[in-house]
Image (tube, rainbow, N blue to C red):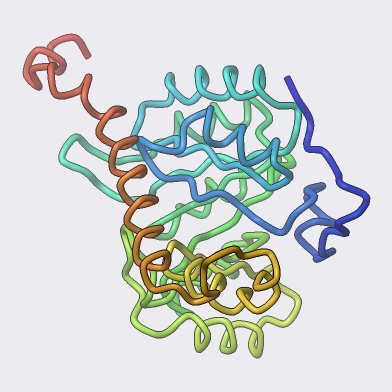
Length: 254
C-alpha cells in the first residue's frame, strides 16, 4: 500500500477538485469498463490523482471484489463509474450496484451515458457518497444537476470512446460555467488533448532536448500510436479470457 507523494520542489496547482477531494493533482482517471480495474485506478490515485474503477457492466458482485482489491493497493481517494444503459444482457447497472456502493462506503460514484434514476442519486447522497455525471450535452448536464449531482464531467464532440457529444468541449464548458457557476465542472479529454498540450509545452522543454526539435513530427506521430497500441493491448488481454466462454453455458450458470 502506498500514498501519493508530494515533491516540495514542484508545487501542484490547487483547484476546487484538489481541495474538496483530497488529491494532489487535478486529474481524474476515466472509469473505462473492462479496462479501469483496480490496478489502473490505484495507479492514478497513488500518482496523486483520483482513480476511478470501471465497475459496470460487470455484475455487482465483481464490484465488491474490485473495491476490496483496490483498497489493498491504495489508501487514497477513488471513485466508481457506473454505466446507465441497456445492453444485450440487460441493464449495465442495477440497484445491486448502488447497494454495493453504499455497503462499501465508496467516496464517489460517476454515472455515464444516460441519466440515473433519481432514487439512485438520493440513496448515494444520503449515504454521504458524492455523485458526478459524465454528460455529453448541456441539456443532460442540467438534468443531472436537477437530480442533485455534485459534479459534471463535460464530454465534447472531440471525445473518444462512447462519445455522444454534439458541441465542442470549449463551448460546452463555457455554457455550463455561465449557467451553473458554482457547480464542480471537469473536462473529459484524451490522447488528442495530450498531444496538443505537449505541443504547447515544448518551448519550456527545448533546452532539455538533445538532437531533437521541439515539434519533431515523428515523435508527435509515434507517441499516440504507441499509447493507443498499449491501450488496445491491455483491452485485448483483459477481454481474452471471455472469448473462451460459451455464452449459453455462462447464462446457464447465472
